Amino acid sequence: MLDEIIMEETLEIEDFEKRDDAAILKQVKRGLKGLRKAPADPLASNVDLIDNEFDELEVKSLDLTEVTDLRQWVDTYYRIQQLRLAFEGTTRAFKKLNRDYQWYEYLAAKMKKLEDFSAKNISVGLDRQDPVAGWLLSLKGVGPIYAAGLISNIDYSMVNSVGRLQQYCGYTTSAVRKKGQKLNYNPWMKSLLHNIGKSFVFSSNRPDCFYGQLYKEFKADESKKNTDGRYADLAAQILASKNFAKGTAAKSAYQKGVLPAAHIVARAQRRMLKVFIAHLAEVIHEATTGEEIVNPYVFAHLQHKDRIEVPNWDGIRSRK
Image (tube, rainbow, N blue to C red):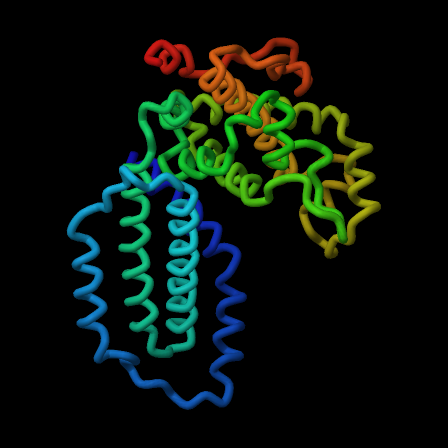
């Protein structure tokens, strides 16, 4: 379980470092204009007090036997994680500017402790007797944080079809943002599933990662279609509808009538996630009703002929 948590955090950190360093550096430089030099150790007199409070917090995990809203714990975990990433980003920016960064480094370390504390309690709070939780935790690439995020944000009673869950998660063609219109899906769930998809891709070299192996199969299929010219019309549509900077790899690929590598990866990941969501819907429906879902997801929807059975479900089902 700890390995899965670390992998989830690593993916988040890598994303943050690639995306936000330049923006943070720009913001810090703007904020320092005309600002007098700050003391080397701001709020230093309170450090010992804060340390003591954190030490007390780490004595033991909370008793979650009476906590019913797992969603609050998941929300708290991600809020703390955002703070940690922000403090780490500010630390890096201050180092580049040769400014005093120790305070932000200190805060980042404390946020990491709180983050680990929250992750531990989420893991404790997951009901291992819940067949859905058991199934999710049996999958390589899904740790307790991701499992709790899915479980706490899905109303089991509404999962009476695969399509309904896919719509809720934002993985249908109609799930798009339109200016002035209310969203018809849950954007938080779509973001969570995108991160889960990255986790599967991250683990795709492991033979025991079912959805990672599925991603590799889909990627090979998408790449073949691309080289065969089957996406030439799509490439032309994208090229005509968007403005690309000169000399970019993406524009060059679209001009040649093929999709760029990143687009192929995105298509393969989306196909893989639609299968995962379909399997999740089947597991939830059977776990709550004892019946197989009506019109289960078949690969014909993804240009395949045969349906893929839900991995690991037989073993979990037999323990119910």
